[in-house]
Image (cartoon, rainbow, N blue to C red; front, side, top):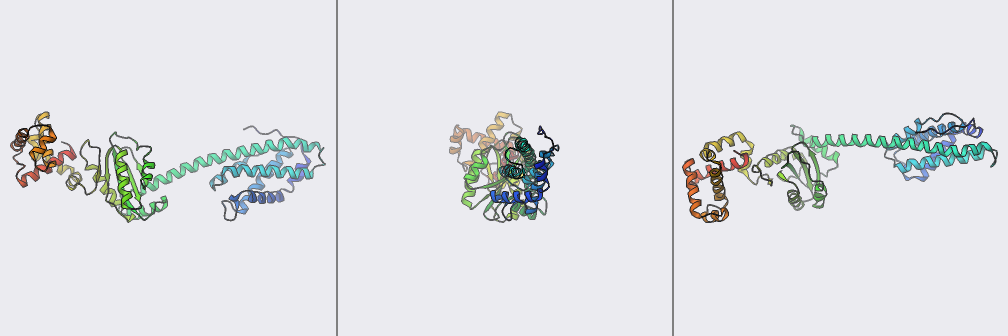
Length: 391
C-alpha cells in the first residue's frame, strides 16, 4: 500500500492534535447516532469505540501535520470490528465520518477560506482517509478469514464429538447438539452412508433436498463413509427425509431406529453402522435397523457368518462359477417367492422343471432340502451370509 505524501508542518492540524480527545468524543457520538450497530449492548463498549476513534484520529492528524502515516490503529480497529461482528460497511462509514469531522475542525481553526495551509490539507486528508480505510479493510478481511477457519475447525470438532463412540458419548453428544444449534425435541435418526464409489462425496444438493423434506441435518464426512444426524419435527417428515436420501445417495445406507432423546446418539450410531453393513454385497439400498434381523446378526459377527456359509453351502460355493450363480439364484428366489416353484420359474425366466432340478442339486451338494423346515432355515441363513458378507 502506498503511503500518502506528507506536507510541511501544518499549524491547523497541530492545533487540532492538541484537542484530539474532544474530537474523538464527538466522533464516537456521531458514529453511534449514524449506525445502529453501536447502540447500548452493541458489539463495542463505549470505551472501546472512543479509544479506536482517538487512536485513528490522532495518527491521521499527525500525518496531516507532517508526520509519516502510522497505520497500526487502522489495522487494529479493522481486526476488532471483524472479531465483534461489526459490518464492513459500518467500519468504512466510521472513517468517512471521521474525515468529515476533521475537515470541519480544520476549517474552524484555519485563517479563512483562502488559508493556503487549509488547501494543502484538503487533498491529503482524503488521501489519508483512503489509506487508513484500506488498511482497516485489509485487516478486517484477514481476520474474517481466520475466524471462519477457526469456526470451521470448532464445528468439525463438535461434529466429531456428536458422533463419538466413547462410553460417555451420550452426555458429550447432547452438549455438542446444543452448541451446534440442533433442537433437542423432535424425531432423530443416525444415517451411515457407504458410497458405491470409494471416497465419493455426498451430492451437493443433498442438504437442500433434506431441508425441503423437513430435516435438519449435520454430517461428518470421512474418507470412505459419511455419518449424519437427521432431526425432523415428526415421524412423517423422518420417513420422507429417508426416502429422499435413498433417491439421491448411491451406495449402502444404514438408518438407525428413530429416537426422541438426544442422549441416544451413540446407540443409534451403532445401529446405523450395523444396518449399513447389512445390505448385500454390491447392493445400493437403504437398510433400516430392525428390517432384516438375520442380516444384522450376520453383519455383527462376520467371521461366524462366513464360517456358517462355508459349512452349509460349501459344495455350492465350490461349484463352477456359472453353476454356482444359478444355484444361489434359485435358492434366493425360492425364499422370496415363499416356496412357489411356479413363481420362481417366472422370476428366473425358466421352466418349473429347471427350478426343481436346481433345488435337487442344492440338496445333493449341501445335504439339506428346502422342504424340511430346519434344513431350510439353515440354507436360508447360509444364503443370507453369502449375500451380506460375500463368499
